[in-house]
Length: 259
Image 1 (cartoon, rainbow, N blue to C red):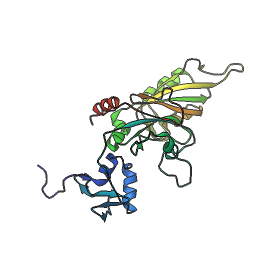
Image 2: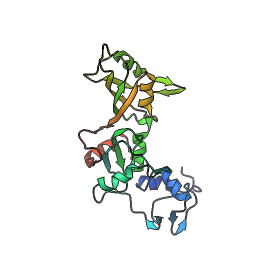
Image 3: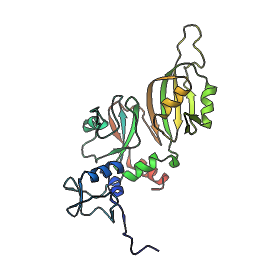
Image 4: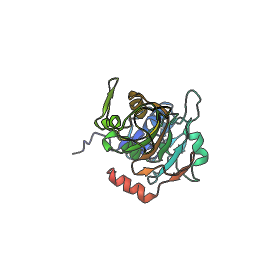
């Protein structure tokens, strides 16, 4: 039975993240900066329990009711940080999104991260719960990458990654990896190229996982693109542009994640 002494509802940081205001971590930072208020009183802790967002304001503006979950596919170019701001002043995805997002689009947060030099598919959503479910390793959502790498490698070495690998005390789970057709396995022979395109699919998505695993095999990664996340593919989406995922596909995804 519910504890009558315990406040009913959820943490405000969680509700604001679910409403797409920002990620939970960013919301906590906003609260620490005194930017979030409840019924006009500035909040001091992200642990505040409330039943809903009525009376909540951010930067003096009332928080609107949460919209239906929406998902956008962004073809992230190399050279952008996956963050709202960077203390070093480096360009972020939000600078590019200002012109790329369609008119009337909600505020969105990225699903996972792509490091500065990684290109390709970055999902964006206004639903914090959906973001979290897509990121959790327990959800087993596949991420697919194409890597251009220089060096010697065989398909047998790549096949061994299905068992996972430990690098410098860090354990990486199973990875499906295949040399693309046209890439030559093994050495270069006499004057041949040792550049390979490798397709990799994994479900954990640890920081710099693909680069670290390929470097562990003695390869130098010169280009890395994410080409798929869950049921969504990069396809021929032009670099730097955004396309909204049809709502029927978003709802199908939510059901598969039991949201």
